[in-house]
Amino acid sequence: MKLLKLVLLILGITIITPSQMKASNLNGGRGLMHIQSAWSLKPGFLTLYAHSRFFGKVGEFSNQTVQSAVTFWDVQGTLSFNYGINQHLEIAISPILYQDNHKGGTGYNFPDDLFMQMKFGSYGSKGSSLTFGGLLNLRFPMAKHHNIIFEPYSAGTVEWSLVGLTTYSRDPLYPEDALNAHFNLGYINHNDVGEKLSDSQSDSIHVRSMTQELMYGFGVKIPSSQFDFSIELYGNAFLQKPPETAYSLETYFFFTPGITYKAYRWLSIDFAADFLITDPNKDESHYGSITKLPGMPNYPSWRINLGFRFILLPTTAYRVSDRDILMRKAESRRELFEQIIKEQRETESAEEELERIKEERRKAERELERLRRILEGEARKKQSNPDSKKDDSGGNQS
Image (cartoon, rainbow, N blue to C red):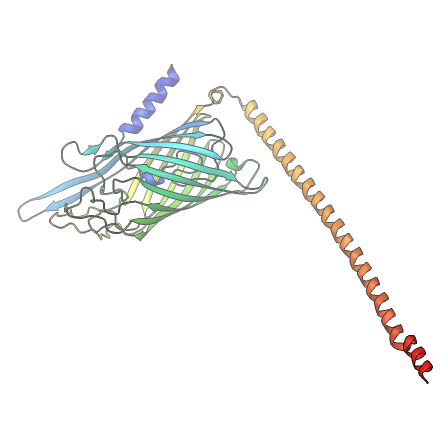
């Protein structure tokens, strides 16, 4: 009962707390806060990741008669459910529960868009430090408003993306207990040709060219017994930009240092801060008759991130002891050693077979050489002796 109350309390704080979730970088599985790892969840594992992130700034607004301070911010709350189907397949459902839309009336989307993901990971040879994978991500429009300032571009359509994943670990036996690094490279298709740009400054603005962009990211984690320390770099590059009335026309690049506190075996708490490396004052949007507030950036110059990661299944995660963990690690190491030995024996067997084939080839070459010498000897004999049949024939005629 106490555990259930604790979970509900943390979820409530996460959803209500002001947050600016960059959903295109949401990672509820293994890896870092923004950067996905190439590792899949183990079969039967179900995790819940509750994200909270916020940004706010005070600016000044003035005209000929009035000068006043204005506060602007961005708020969002998101959950991610990840489940391991088998050794290489993981699925995820990530609803955005709350998103500020900065419009009149309610001023927020509740709910916002829904993300669904299929991840194919944990590919690589046994004992190797490198692991590879990929994922397919779909975004379904559930929100009332899109094209929101401070947020990545979204057109209110079914969008899709493909991402390639590479992970390196210094210790392939216990990959998450050693220094590990992750690299992501993805493509996003916004599927927005012919669509009216939601919340644009003109009702006549329609998308004429498919908006497409590349997403990339790199991150390093340094784990310890109770705390993990991480550094992430991620950004985007448009292959085809959205219309000029979109708020998020500019490319971005963020630097994110973070720390993870491993409170329990089934709960870890992430804290990180995003810092915008690119120019926050660069503005390529066309606002028409709408005047943008002075000092209001298109992307936040900083953000605070907070995340809670729960292991929901298997339930043995709540009862497992240190001894059980060590036994499981030893068992996994034994299986890895057996696989390496098996592969080594197969390699040795293949090498023996290759050596046998080489020996047979050498024998065949010796036989061909012997036959060649025999044929050359017979040819020399014929050249040195006259043709006997011609001699006999010539003698009878004389």
